[in-house]
Length: 583
Image (cartoon, rainbow, N blue to C red; front, side):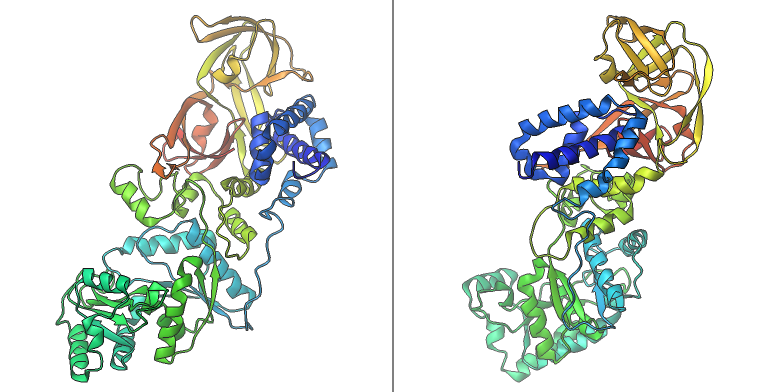
């Protein structure tokens, strides 16, 4: 292993203690293994030795009662700090964003989403960094909708972006649309073409592509010095004489440039489709390559933060501003945020929706902000996670478990615990009595209590039932101890036992339960990787059925709850269902 055995043992012990203390004194190997690998994936190289060590730690922790576990927790750093401070992703010790070049007070950044879909976690990274820099330098953040492609844009998406940014806690100082400045952009487009730095091209799309690959100029560019010819074409494309696919405006670049972006890229194209805000008033629309630099300059943007995918296009960005003699912002690049098997591409998402493979933009398998909110992620965890990655060009894919860990630390102290058993098996306590018991909603924090009516009949999870043996003594969590007398697998539903006492016995196995007097049928939707080997995973959404204690029916929709030994969940619109968040 990379680190010393003592250090690994200390981390494992901290994880196991915290997990056990949060789950009525019991932890397990799989949970500890998952947590340690999410922080230290390099330990996979010696997984056999790691599992052996975890088994030793788990066994020792499970022998302790809650009081002893609490005392030992107090003797070590909290799990969050212990694990996070040693994580290679810097989960607690957030990377400090590097200082901006030539930045004083008055820094202006912008977030320019296209309203062609719902924002995802990649957008969250971009806008959080934009806002952090604006606040760091006492500047301003502009939310500018890049709405210059009417075919893909809808009013629904403008509003969705605003709502999701509000949920993230983002407060733009200015909100505007690129389409607000369309006539101004037209004027700069005319200036560029009249100066000979761009030209109107009427070549067929196939020929344009062919000329670019062969690095030769098209006939339209070769006629660019014919003033009358050029001015006539400029008038036609701006007055609406040309129709869609009949003409475009191209930048006069270098057809021999090794960077294909500079081989006369398109700056304006005709789109005969109604715009969600301007209707059919405008037919000639700038591409992002033209609109972004001009808008950035006119809006006073001092630092244009762009993801690495625009790296080859940055030279075009600067060239356009040079030709138009406009002020140039400082371009700052950073890597995109992606995860394995969890695509964020709007194109892919739309295709999945159109094919009926997912339910919509809020499908819990997605990383849209709408879906993550519905699934139970806290916006503070997303911000903390983004900042933990720092500003880097390295195209690495962080483990999703790291984000889950941050979310867990935020929601754990304020989330009530309830019982849920999947694949329920009946358990009968021969001499069990009818009574009412009071249970705490949280093991350490004051989140209230709940009263549960019990009799002699309970339900436990099949996973627990198959591990029981006759004459074994076990404890019904927070209730009393029982001794197994008979297991009737023939009927596959009844386990009889006798009541012993309420005293907690060290090392006794603990079993979660629900009472037949206070239970309800309950379903939990659990997500798995949406893609496997770059293909849609048809088994990426499963439903776990079982019984939950009836207290859950009193909770409002979109309430966070932790089902003990199962995981955190967010209650759904139907009172009988929830969406699994994470363990």
